[in-house]
Length: 380
Ligand code: NDP
Ligand code: MG
Image (cartoon, rainbow, N blue to C red; front, side, top):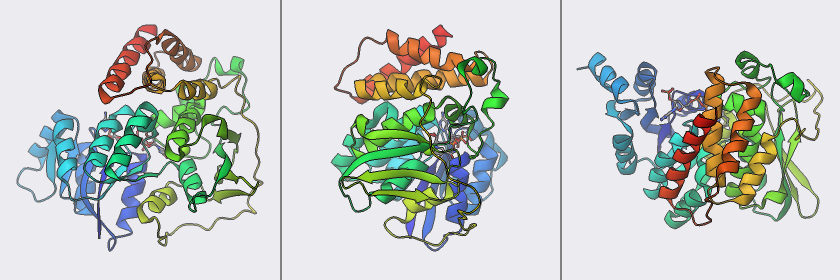
């Protein structure tokens, strides 16, 4: 029986993980579940999965939940990030699903790796903001980082034999605004941007999918996960989201992994690897629609090259990119700025960052993240 922890259990990926785990009661037991503030939902999930503890980073919600369920049997309630990190450190779990959103995933991910646990990572922002550091810790502790992001799961599966390859081709749906001009994007609303054609996901990543920053972040994620230089990572628009990514090997043979757009497969692949377990779901029917591929429009969707350039610059540049993006997306979601301002803010913050360094320690990452957040807020 494998013991696990889910970070971000109440989110979109977290809920998928919950469903996958519920179907595998003989293989997986849950030690802990972590969320930010959805207290009742987390409590219920904890009850159903017989978790030993649940943790809420929001202390007020944790206190309220304790009050509500005083005297009842159920998981122990842990309050605040510091105590959650302690619970992760001493947990008997050997695997941690990283499905928190944004930079908040960094400290729990590092804590899990430092304490001998493998990370099953959906939370790409952690790798974007601190990829070198996270990889270094994983290497030092002999721990694995298994991708849960669907494209990276596809690449991971194609690279199972560790064979030499020429290129990674990351597929990208193009988001809700594929084919639009910049002029047309000036007036799009939050509702328009939240209408993703294929995937149902949390709000932040859905906006990232509309700007194509999601794919930009995934280029950096691929660089870290597979140790691949940026010039060997390409993006291919594939509106049907059936081909989850491809690898072209040195002999020209190209492999892909296909499936319906459903995070249950990448979550379970990461959990079962190198085994495969049965998973209920509709069979893939390739006669349903044509599969088409196209080049991305990098002039309209500038985020793609912005992220690639930040990745190439390295050091703290991707940390700054990530923080500026998180703030700008938040401002757009709260209707404080327009859609196209997201990328403008990121550009301005990156342009103002003149203290880059190639040697990156945790404190520098935290400082660069704080700096970029302040800058982005000031520029809005
Ligand atoms: P959601 O917004 O649906 O869920 C986010 C989860 O993280 C929730 O459990 C939330 O808790 C928790 N959380 C949010 N902020 C904090 C914080 N400050 N501290 C601690 N926990 C926090 O996001 P998704 O599930 O869509 O995405 C999660 C991650 O996975 C992201 O990094 C995303 O890029 C990545 N990903 C998602 C995919 C998807 O299909 N959704 C696909 C590939 C990658 P609460 O509910 O209590 O607020
Ligand atoms: Mg993805």
